[in-house]
Length: 139
Image 1 (spheres, one colour):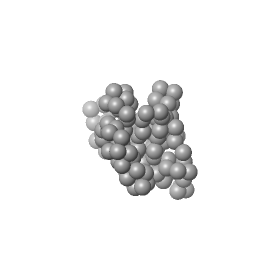
Image 2 (image 1 turned 180 degrees about the horizontal axis):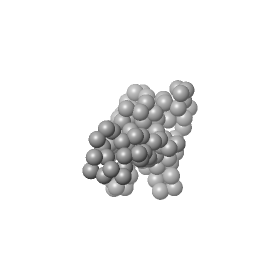
Image 3 (image 1 turned 180 degrees about the vertical axis):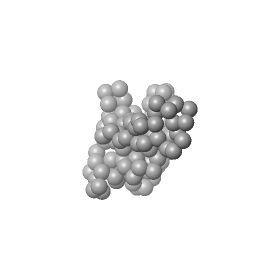
Image 4 (image 1 turned 90 degrees about the horizontal axis):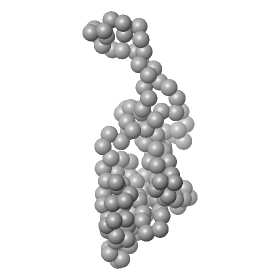
């Protein structure tokens, strides 16, 4: 696999410091988010099939020669962080949320009028001009 297939960007510390400074200077509201089970939320780009573990079909012998199709990413898959980032990016830049990002500046900074989101692996910080704006992103 190439680095492009497995590398997930993380927010630049300069971006984070700037966002904190602006939040304090202008009295913006902010909230931190920890995404639970983040890496298992992403769809896989291609199907993966696994055999049942020994004894895994004990209660149902009809499953003995069957395979399991994995539909979501798994912890331990080295592509999991990249797949998660791609999932977050697609979600935040969708019409529902309307954020924009710039890969040349910081691919983990998502902006829309009155609101910003920074993503660091499976955590994020949402900053907005008021509490209602922040909560609209989190809801």
